[in-house]
Image (tube, rainbow, N blue to C red; front, top):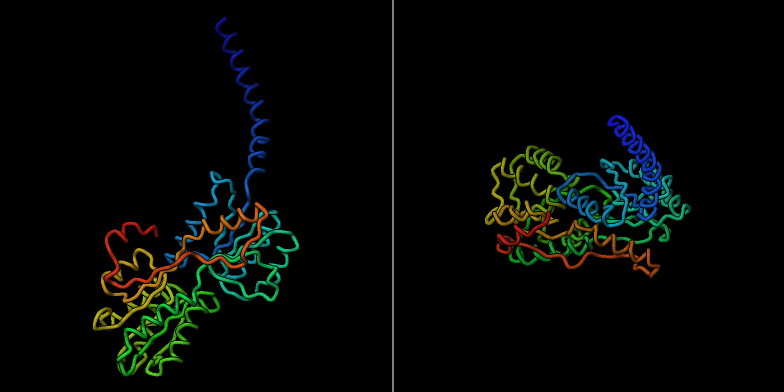
Length: 331
């Protein structure tokens, strides 16, 4: 009798397993249909800012929040972004979000997305296209305004100095941050005849590349020049610049080289507090909530501004950095 009951229980369990086996895929499919599918192409993970930017997107576009996120890193190659976007089109995602490596060269793949009826949201950097209808919206910072803040600080700080020797470390060429921050410095150089550009080099927004090019420059000169300012276009470049300068005996801080940086990550703010970075211009990487706001506006059928800038960003000097600020910094 005992064996009969065990057999009956096993049969019931098997039938239940079959029943739920048939039901679960359908239930999962129904759940999938309720999710908004986002195809996202990220530049890569070249900097602390970029890592924080990616984490912000992943936290916002979670299944718990009603999304399914298809996230791909391009490893600093635009052709990888083209391939990712075409995969997203084939997968019939609801929205495509792109953090473009450079501003140029996007027309063809964006036209494919438009023909597929998929809105494209550009985050962080911009795209330069002749047909504005290819892009649904842009979310990011006003990077030229960020550069202007740094230039104004330089004008005030060095207003009584007969000559100001500047080294400029550019980010990835043709990226929005590089274009805007470079243009601001170019305008500053034109407006201040006492500013002398010693050298301009490409750091690609990375610490390693900046250390390399700065070291090469300092080795190449007959005698080490007086350097008043190193204008770096992001924090990781600033780290590399400080490392290279100090290895050649330069002092970064009061009475030495004024290193200017953009992003204001927690580590960079610590550098600033210690005096090794003279000025930090904030560029907020936490764009996930702003991109979601754009998508929710589109979902509701409301009109959407083409350009959506992040809220007010701050400027920091060493005296502005407190324990509380560092503790509360989310990136």
